[in-house]
Image (cartoon, rainbow, N blue to C red; front, side, top):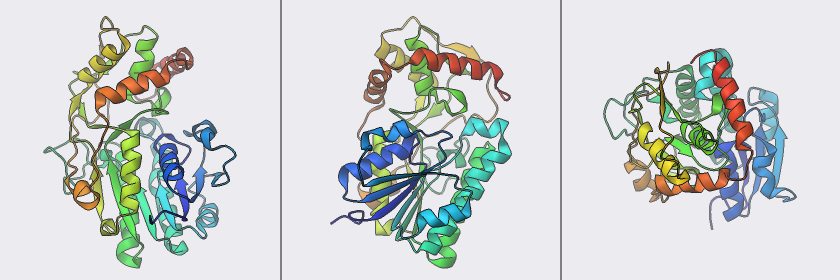
Length: 337
């Protein structure tokens, strides 16, 4: 019997990218009731459409900064997955709002989880708390020197959750996923990420864009693996009170990402267009998943090449031209390049 079976589970940000895949993993493998709390700023009801009509899923549209609302949503909850946040690029043009959601909002969630007496709070942070790698691979003890208000706010948020564990004994596990990609990832606006944005550009005959020298590295993990990792930690008693890094341990340059996408689309002629480096861009990331593997036995299963091919197929037939126009307009008007 799984610790998630029959549980009442709250997923903040559950209509977003990683959040909706976490919901899929929960409802696809466990007899549980899932309540999603999402502002729908970055998420959408469409991301949960496959569960339409399923009585096990409820959606509450609201803001995690609203303590009264969060308390009411948490009442009677057994397990909480906290994923609601605003992103890296958003923090450059709206640092105060970004901080309020990622830091203050996380405090509201942690306090509500404490008061509700949940059996597990899985606080989903980010590899951005580390900043650029000093050494690789990066384990949980790597120094935290965030480059952006986003990274700083995520670091503050995870610290609030750890405080609930240390002071009140709230059963918390903090998770630091590295770069996640896959279906439903954002291709446009200030939430857009390199892999989906590049797929959309190249699918419409546009050259991909790289910043700086294009040799920045990331550790990319498919969203199905990220969601599986979150569930594994929710069911691991030994993880309580710990901060755990999850990733593939494979370091890939932005140039190589563009090459893999060009191969998947059959467009080797669309070579990257180079632009000056952007403020806040981390130069190097690569995870050490040793602790995760030891605690849960979890290892990622999807290779980057296979994951990109899967995402190319997912975007096929969607309105990628509209996504491209929106992204180009945003890029032109972006306050911080």
